[in-house]
Image (cartoon, rainbow, N blue to C red; front, side):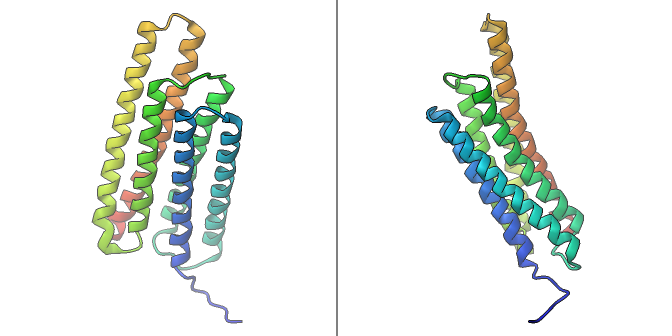
Length: 208
């Protein structure tokens, strides 16, 4: 058996891309949940399973960082990107779980709107991470990151409008607090996605 001190760089890209696929899968499951609000516990259980699988990818990636000398870009950036991707799915699962814990009967329109933004963001993250394999694609990675920032701003506007409407029209204090928390948690997912975009942009700037 041959032993090499030099890892195959492709392994890091494979792991990061696998994590992004879990992000998309999780976001699409959240979107299915809010648009077809049936079998809620089963869908959330599936989402938690995806989250655990993504956690395993993160652990594998971080373990490799401790055992290898050569990495495709700064190990600190690999570490930061790994955690940023994991945070997106963690918060996605948290948002979905809120719907069950808060005994939601039917998601309101802003929930569906925010979920759609999250799906778009996770797909853009996947594309941006894929572009990191080739320096000739760095400009495209930056373009995806710019779109991620735009989507986060869109989500922020949806959330602000939804919360303002709650204070204008909701007379039940418990309902107001319930939906405000749900909206803010969903918007926090988009914040995490923007954090991942910031890490990717930092990598591009360093490596360009």
